[in-house]
Structure formats: C-alpha cells, structure tokens
Length: 588
Image 1 (tube, one colour):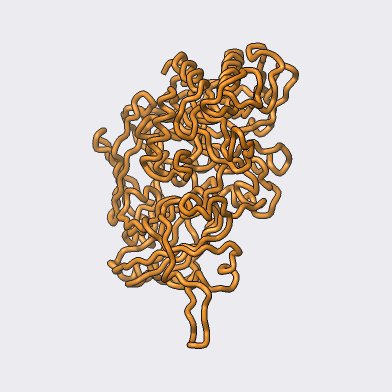
Image 2 (cartoon, helix red, strand yellow):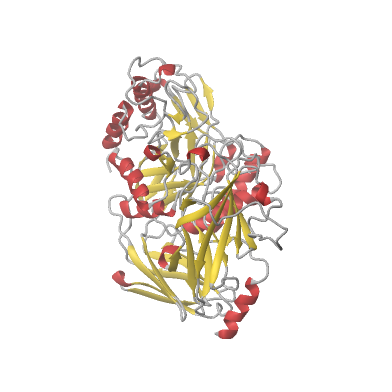
C-alpha cells in the first residue's frame, strides 16, 4: 500500500491538469469547502499577467511591495454568482480572484479538489502553484492534490466570465451571464485504488437485463473483482476488471421500471477489495419507433417546458437543492412530465431532484446560436463539454435526451461538428436519445417543412418556432401543415410570445406585451399542433421570465425576457392556464 501511494504522489507532482470529476461525489467521503471565500475584483485582469495574485507572491525584502492582498478582503459566498452578491458587480464580466484556506491531515488516502462548476474560465492555484485550468461554465472538474496538500493550505481561483467569440456559449447570448464559483466545492478522499466511474442501466431495448461497466482508478485497478448488488431485488453480480481497470456488466434483472408516474429507484451498491460506493438509480428504457417516443416500451407524449437555472425573484443563479425543487415543482404544477434544461447542463441537484420527482429531462451543452464551429480547437471544446455532461449524469434515469446544440446555422463546419458530436454521444451512451434544437425550417405560406440534414444523425428532431412572435401568422394556426424529410419524432422545443404579467389589453397587437396577446399565440399554437401527426412533445418557452440585459424595452421588459408563463415572482399569466388545460387533456 505504501509503495502504491508513493507512486500516486510522484505522478501528482508532475503537471496536474483539470480532470473530469469523479462520478457520484455525493456518495464519497467529502469535506465541503462551501462558505465564505475572500475575493479581489480585477476588472483589467491585471493579476493574471504579472501581479502574482494566483501564486500569492509576497515581498522579497523591505524594499519590495506587492499591490494586492487577500488578508483584509471581504468575502463572497460559494457556491453563488458574484453578480447578485455585490451591487457593483451586477453587470460585471471580467476577473474575480477567490481564496479559501483549509487545514488537512494526511491519512493515507488520495485527495481530490472537485468544483461543481465555475463560470466561465478557472485557473486554480494551491499553495502558490498553479495546478491547472478549466474552460466551461456548467460542468464539474477536479484536480488530484494528494502530493500538494499540506497541514495548512490556500486555494486561489481566478474566475473570468468574460464573453468570447471562441467561447461556448459565444460572445452573445440571451440570458444572464452569472459569473463565479457557482456550484459546490469539495475535497474528496478515496483509497489508493478506488471506483472512479460506472454506468448501470437497462440494456438498450431490454427491460429485463442490466448492462454497463465499472472503472477503477489506481495501479492495482487491473484484475480486481467488482461486485454490483441491488439488495431490494436480490441481485448480486461479480465481474473482474481488465488490463484497463474496467469491468463489463451484463446480468438479468427483474426491476420495476422508473417512470413519471412511478419514479422508483433502487439502492445500487458497488464494491471492490478496497472501495465501496452506493447511490439511488432508477431503471427505464427510452426508444423511438418511427415518429413515436417509447418510455418503457409505451408511447409517451412529452408534456414539457423550458427552464433556465435562475431564481428570478432573487435575481441570482439557482444552485441549491431547494432551488431545484422550487423550479421542478412549478413545472409539475402546470402538468409537465418533461423539462428541457436550457441551454446548458444545470446543477446536479436539478437532475437528481428530477429523478426523485419523476420528471423526464432534455439536457444540452451550450452550443448556442453563433458558435464559431470553424475556430481552431472548437471541436475539442465541444467534445469536452459533452463528455463532462454525460460523465456526470449518465446514471440519472430522468435524462432521456442528450442535446448537442440550439439554433445553430447550417453550413459545412456546423454540420460536420454536430455529426461528430452525435457519434461521440452514442459512443459514450447508447441508451439515450440524441437531439438538437433547430430553428431553420422552410415556410411556404402555411406549409412548414423540416429538412435540416443533420437530423438524419439524430433520434429526435427539435424545432424552435415563434409563429405569432418573431414570425407573424399568415393564417389561423389550424391552417398550418407540417411535413418532414425524416420519419422521426418532433419535439416543438421552443414557441411562445412575450407578456408582462398583469398587463392587459389587445389580443392582436404583439408590441403591447399583453397577457391577452400571449394567450392568443398559445391558442393558435395548440390548434396547429393538432395537425402534426409526428409531434411527440412540446416545450413552451419558457416557464419563468428570466434576466437578459439585451432586453431593453423600458416599459415592459426592463432587462427581462418576458416569454415566461410565470413572472419572475411566480405570477401566472393567462397563457399558463392554456398550457395547463392542454396538458391535462393529454393524459398521463
């Protein structure tokens, strides 16, 4: 054991880089680093160039000085966005430096520093040394710090949320750019050889067989026995790891399927000679048959809504378990069995809460609109974000769709990038459906045709259409007919109109932002939906009004996108009742 640990200590001394986070951090031995972190505001990003903030440089002698100090600095709460915590940072998009100090006593275990998410770029320093970086604001990452941790430790994180045309999302996007350490930070301890990752679910197309894999980490990872048990179902299955430390799983199982009506989950335990972990997992199948979506081999209509990761009443990022419950309960109150998590991976609390409440999920990476697909390194960034999203959430039964993008413009670079992502997603997880949300359909008066060629690589087609808002109706909704080049299910992934809650008036004038106009748009939309035989689900845009600085209509918008069926305070608009009645008529 001592020799094994020494090997890891030596490896950790050479070039630490951000790694994909360990699966199921919540099931590990953790020490939370949440709470108050000291901060320095650096609008010119000066400390990143030559000021030594990250390394916590100190004067070399009495004649030298440094122009920064955390010692007397105030604090920000982690997790949380910095924009909502300080008035002077309301619209801030640049660098904030965070510092947290902690004590640690080595105990023969390996030690990992795990960030739930940092928006958007993070450079991480430990005890004066840069240990690595991460790009992407919505997925977890980690560093092994076994060899670097001391009795007293100091973590410094440079956080920068400045938009960039090479970013994902790119320079312009229609939601609030909350910066900061926005999700949990934990120290995670593991044995020298431990269960790093696993995937346990019904085999695709088989509701009586479980398949998957377990991956061990450590020099003794090869040739170990791994046992997977489901005590409630009387299941115990053993397999041995190969030379790569991976044990393949496949065994018969009689399990009650997870569904919105019965979100049954089982305690699944994984054990090796040196490690053990467990979590609650639901088992279900998700497939398509022509234009139909099948959940547990039964047709399901996806009664959905779009949700942003925001608590509008607090003007802040949603990041707690109670925040997730609040958002999902409002979706369920409208009759939803399905939620599109837009336009980025939401917190792990959200997907785990959906598991427990029985809410089906569409989860996507933030490849939103003006992504520079032909930019050097862009495909690697997209692939990394997809890998990190799937790695975190692949054991969540609620997630039935991995989405690759939203409203991207067709062209050789974009088409090739999305096809590669589709192939990657299938290689990482063959059990779920693959989709993208497109807004390029062909209109010919009242005929609407779906022809985006990337759709042939997808399982489900998502279409964002704003008839009645960005595109006027040419006839009543019932007169519209939809056709498609693909025999695949269609989810109307966005539609709607803006209205200021409590503002009433004309139902035929869009630019008055009345509840009556929004209500009429929804009536026409639902009339149109009746004529789409391949429609498998609907996702109104959006559940709550949400913040967006680009929305500058001072009388009605005031920095908010007003397409919510609820106001930011939770007030129901007239359109909410239209959707509620529609979903009630669709049955379970």
